Length: 323
Ligand SMILES: NC(=O)c1ccc[n+]([C@@H]2O[C@H](COP(=O)([O-])OP(=O)(O)OC[C@H]3O[C@@H](n4cnc5c(N)ncnc54)[C@H](O)[C@@H]3O)[C@@H](O)[C@H]2O)c1
Image (spheres, rainbow, N blue to C red):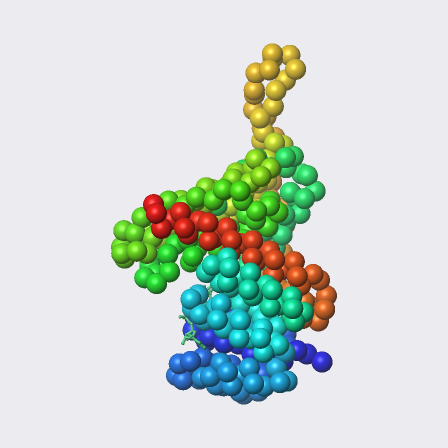
């Protein structure tokens, strides 16, 4: 039997989740504290609409709750849903502080429930290809990773560029390197809205010695959604703005010929793009959540990986406050 799913938050993003869960599971409830959002529910006559999150949780036959409300509400709503015995898929980040996330992870573990953060990019076939290449050692030893997530707008006044844009790249960087940073520093400026940084630069250093950087901004002439991984044998770029060439592999690397007395030289070989499936990452994310609910996969790891992202975000946010 398909799990019965409820989606809370029917603003910009929630309807995309509702569409996928209507297709993949039994969409049983739709919830938004703003009653006018009932219009989204009109598309799904099989689902009940409520403006009360509590009313939805009181349905004992509801298996899972999907939370797509504003970031500051995530922790409290996820806590309530887990306490009510529901599996939870919560938009990123599930909590704004590491201690809050630890509480959610502990709750999920105690009740053996799924707690999955909506780290959409981890389900992107391009990112999955990148991970496959790194894990297979195709790039040699990875030295550094950097992400560019910039464009002009959408200018947000309640969430800074680190929270709004950075969580995506951070989740990918930690997933690719499979390490937690020993150092994470962010510097930025609030040019347009007081206290809301619109341009942020982040530096991360990992126990293995690898380093990473993120440039996050909505004050930029270029729209960029790019991640570059530099290895000792190859370098790879994942560019989500490209329609077909999402991944480009550069057979370029430094090398030290034995006859040149230790002098470094550069080697340039082929440049190619492997084929990347065109599947919708959100659909893959929803399918991954339903598999975990079904008991497949490692539900604890997904929650703990999410906690790693929130802890790194916490470090970055604290240093940003003082920059
Ligand atoms: N994964 C992605 O690529 C992606 C993209 C866009 C947004 N998001 C995330 O989705 C979330 C929502 O973003 P959005 O742009 O849709 O925001 P939004 O403001 O457009 O919508 C949020 C909705 O939640 C409702 N809401 C607020 N508090 C509620 C509560 N207690 N109970 C029920 N409903 C409540 C609001 O009335 C609103 O309709 C954010 O966390 C955002 O970061 C993720």
